[in-house]
Image (cartoon, rainbow, N blue to C red; front, top):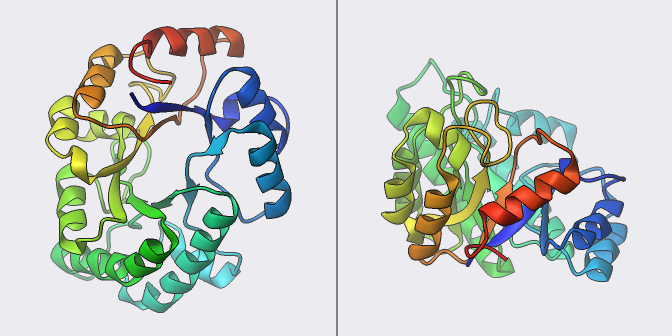
Length: 266
């Protein structure tokens, strides 16, 4: 079974209050990616008091200049980010450890027009290879996320899971994996079940949302019962996080998610 992580945006209250709210609804994990504006001590207290884990955070920096380079308008497809990427990843991993969070999300940035795609591919591999030892030492996993360019992230470099898995293999670290977002990959390439099952050893985190509209599973075209069955049959036991909107009230939404994941998630 995998652990279902509720979307922070579904819950009432401020960042710190949402852990208690997640516990009230019976969740063991919560996904809220941003961390740079937090009181990390207060956040850790909320995590410890609730017993609800933070399932992932995003690679960020408190340095505005470095953060500009991390945004999709730049990113790790650019070789000039290498040194600052080490600083940002070190800062993010330190925050993750403080929050007892074990997954850090990485993104590629937008595709460049001045060099070939293969050069950009190699830049991603080189950047992740440089920060992999930091993750290994901290016991944290960096999860690289492909995104769709048809609906949400026009211009983004890393679109297909195939190229994402190639990057992970080339980096060759047990602490660098792929974030498989079912919503994005259904739009980009389909074949979700086979891509998950055939590469499960390279997947470190899963995001959930239905197509169209990026709403909760069960509201669109994806047969999520079959997807959840495949995830479990492949042996995945990590987090699958709801990263999507909610079409109904919270109580009904939680009830529907519990029914949809029954037998597959805790």
